[in-house]
Amino acid sequence: MTMAAAEQLAPQQPMVRFENVSKRYGNLVVLDDLNLEVSRGEKVAIIGPSGSGKTTVLRMLMTLERIDGGVIWVDGEPMTHMMQGGQMVPAAQKHLRRVRSKIGMVFQHFNLFPHMTALQNCIEAPITVLKMSRKEAEARATELLGMVGLADKKGHYPAQLSGGQQQRVAIARALAMRPKVMLFDEVTSALDPELVGEVLHVIRQLGAEHDLTMLMVTHQMGFAKEFADRVCFFYQGKIAEQGAPQELFGAPKNDRTKQFLRAVLESG
Amino acid sequence: MGTFSLSVMLVGAVITLAALATSHTFSVFFPGLLEGAWLTVQIAVCGSLLAVVMGTVSGLAKLYGPRPLRWLAVTYIEIFRGTSALVQLFWLFFALPLFGISLEPFTVAVLGLGLNVGAYGAEVVRGAVQSVSRSQWEATIALNMTRLQALRRIILPQAFIAMIPPWGNLFIELLKSTALVSLITLSDLAFKAQEMNQTTMRTIPIFTLVLLMYLVMSLCITIGMKRLEKTAAKGMPRGRSV
Image 1 (tube, rainbow over the protein chains, first blue to last red):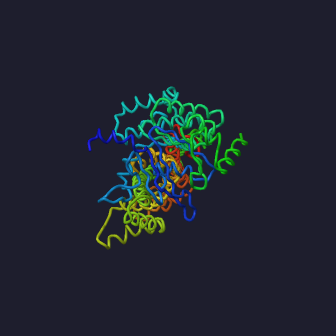
Image 2: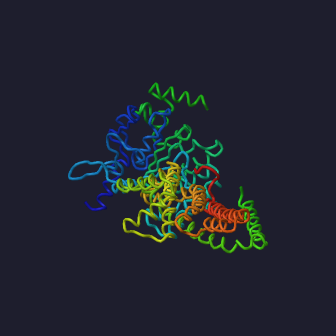
Image 3: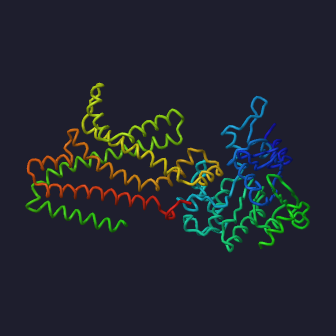
């Protein structure tokens, strides 16, 4: 099959597919036989009470957690497994890295490299991993930092930036690796309330300007409602309910969903 | 204490030393002691270099090496940390020749002290690397870096900062341990002092000078390490890393 033919076929494949994925810690079942498909360019918000396994979904997709059962597919090929002699075997490091390069992640606590400036944070992986020239990497990082509104802060170290600014650097850093899928793991949870807006603004802009597939775990119901194409409500390691935001927020069917939304709305 | 007050202390010690060196009572001892001090410095510097190399290699081997290498590192660390430095020096100096390997006293001193302190250094390196938050590793995975790239570019530079103060301690320990080499025929500062004391019985001036000389050397180490820490930690928040 030629590359062009493969590309033509690709849009029919979901960007991300969890197939009967399960995850346990000892006896505790964190994710139970999860099946989830995310289309190209789709924005999926994942909500649910703590301990429902929602963050684990992202961490497994980023290969930060091993899965105990099932297969995760990315861009039409298995990520956690590979074909060898006509059989699916657990992925070797090399395979994992190749497929993983399509995914970027932004963390709750930013996880910036504290010994590097904003710019250095954004050029490190493009240079060491993508083998980009320093000049090219710097030009691109400057552009991305400009996009998140931090062009004037590129020489600052993380400790010299506010939480909101750090998180925007983290978004620029992830984008510098040109991912096809972006994962946002409670990216505003560690921020002071007045800094949440600037980060959400960047994500909103990203959604409007780029064809990125996005999965976000969030507690910002308002944002999920307005931004997401689909909302998944997780409860005890399963998707208890999913649907368009208007449906799920407007007329939830599942009792757990109703209970959760009521509790969240009451807390403001 | 800040670098400034330490520098004041160092200047004070040097001035006192210079004043004593030119005074009538002390001046006769000064050249001989200075000669011993020079040897002490040489052993301390060479030993420290060896300790850093051994500490880094075995500390990282213990953490990330393949199993045989890990065992080798653990064996080295336990042997050299678990036995006395003096016995190690004696073993290298008196026992090793019986196996047909005779080393120069200077080599034995550097080897013995360097290997001994390197074993402690291995734990310093291991502890510092492990003190870097797991979330830093996770960020490198999310950026698709290899383990080696992550270690070299992200983890070690942060661990390095955490290593500096304990390494400073070890360098001072090593400097003081150099006094042991007088027992394997080397004329270091401690040896010269004892020799002069035995022949002249002028205990107070001799050991006052020696005390000041060791103090000047260790202050140089402390100040040097402080400056290194300041340079290395540029931009980093005080206290725990993010």
